[in-house]
Length: 299
Ligand code: AMP
Ligand code: ZN
Ligand code: FE
Ligand code: FE
Image 1 (cartoon, rainbow, N blue to C red):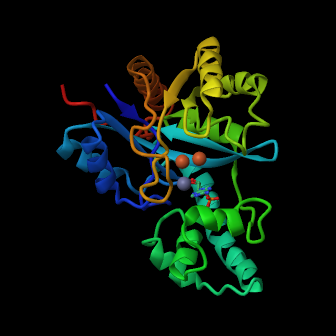
Image 2: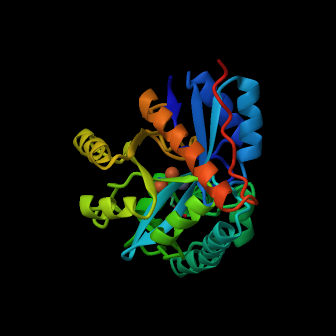
């Protein structure tokens, strides 16, 4: 059983359509794939239909841009009801922050003599729901200013570079509560990657369990093996699920091929059980909540 629980399509900053991504997952020998576009459920329907057709399992997810103690932290939210009013309001603010940041980034680039139009970025993105820095990077590739997304980040878009602009993120602890209300479960994405490592100490992670945290993405490209082992041990100690995933972005990010990291079958089983339980609890509290269903692996 091979499961990859963190991937991005063109609905955010990946380069495959949701259906293409699912077909690529099946071709890569995966039994289960989750689509986790940034701050959006826009690709779920297409991906779920493609998974049924391809005969693999599908887990609906999203990677929510959160803030904790002044740092950006990414939360993978699986199985939430995307129509939940509180969650929708948070996502609306984050997506608005993404839209507002774009002209600010382009203004910075103009002072450097680089002229890119807002409409060009939106068109190049395929009118993605969640507009990101990678789409600006694609525009810079198109104008010939840089060779690829990585160079665009290194020269202009990463923190400390001249066209970096902060954007709104949602407060992590309240998002965890909303995810539970919306019938889903929260797993910290790449907790020890450069941005979030400083704030996500073992003590803080332990305190987040009280806020409803269900898992840690231990096995990820951003984590050297020693860190992944420590995160797996931390998850075991705290009763959290330890996942593994590629964080696939299509051709937009190298070294993130589908299935390059996977979630152990016994961890997947626990995650799915926690999702079922979270959905049940949320519906007991509020029958108008409709948690997004998993497409099971065909037996
Ligand atoms: P944003 O959400 O718009 O702030 O942009 C963050 C996204 O940029 C993340 O999904 C990363 O995967 C992507 N990203 C960050 N650094 C790089 C890089 N060097 N090359 C390609 N993509 C990157
Ligand atoms: Zn991304
Ligand atoms: Fe992330
Ligand atoms: Fe991601």
